[in-house]
Amino acid sequence: MNLVTELQSKIDQKTKPLGALGRLETLALQIGNVFETLTPQICEPTILIFAGDHGIAQAGVSAYPQSVTAQMVVNFLNGGAAINVFARQHGLSLKIIDAGVNADLSNYDELLHAKMGFGTHNFLNEPAMSVEICEASINLGAAMVQQLQHIGCNCVGLGEMGIGNTTSAAILMHQFTKIPLTDCVGRGTGLNDKQLAHKTAVLKQAVEKYPHEQTPLETLATFGGFEIAMMVGAYLQAAEFKMLIVVDGFVSSAALLVATQMNPKVLKNCVFSHVGSENGHRALLEHFNVRPLLDLEMRLGEGSAVALAYPLLQSAILFLNEMATFEEAGVDKS
Image 1 (cartoon, one colour):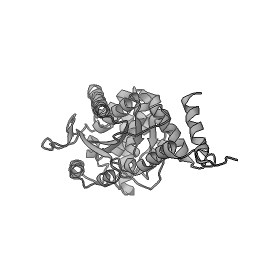
Image 2 (cartoon, helix red, strand yellow):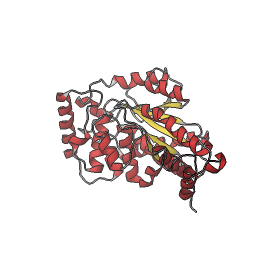
Image 3 (spheres, helix red, strand yellow):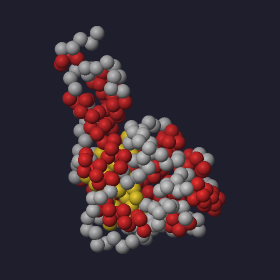
Image 4 (spheres, one colour):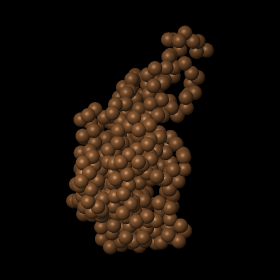
């Protein structure tokens, strides 16, 4: 009997009708399979927030100025953002990484410093970064996960912060899925109709500027962000370490899309926390052929949905490990 069969048998023997816990049963099966055990436990759950700025913001694709990225990083460090509130609520560790914020944040000791530059280049004019810098960013993201593994972490969620990063996410989604660009581009931080049309026009112009045949790494270097590249490395490394990966919103899902181009097996380790209201996110999840746990019409990013979905992971594990079987409870099955 293989592990999946044993896990399903264990789930079916609990004191409930077959399948009565619905998707919690599917979740328990997945978690046990990822951890390769009949008695899974989550240890040192941590959310990594990668922050970076995007040169494409100079093209007027965001309703907020680029300075907001650095301001929000400081807000994270001060414990005042939504993710801070939700992480505290559920006992999740939170680590903030400067992947490439366009500001000098060197005085913040609690920040993890991995700055690859003061924002990427404007890919309307030139590639966002070189292939070499992109590879280095991927490796740094992997190194962050290696550090977590050293402290016993086996469950990681990835969040992001970066004005303009839904623009990068949309074009990456289009390039890898071939879904029409207009179905990938959304309002981001709250664009009006005129601003959305401008954002779409900018991306159409950018798509035409570069060769249509690029490797995944070249595509990421052309259109990505430092924080997106680091998330790619973090996904790949977490899967290699057989960690449970909790995916956040649209930008985090776009980074995962890139990672799956490099190793499709990453997907089996991923739990999708939610589907957001950002245009493109639902279609991207459909491309992955996955179902998210939550649909709260959120479009915040920063790992917020990871924290909100975490109690469902705990519930799936607890029923698997602690709920009585029919035999233990002396309850007839038929």
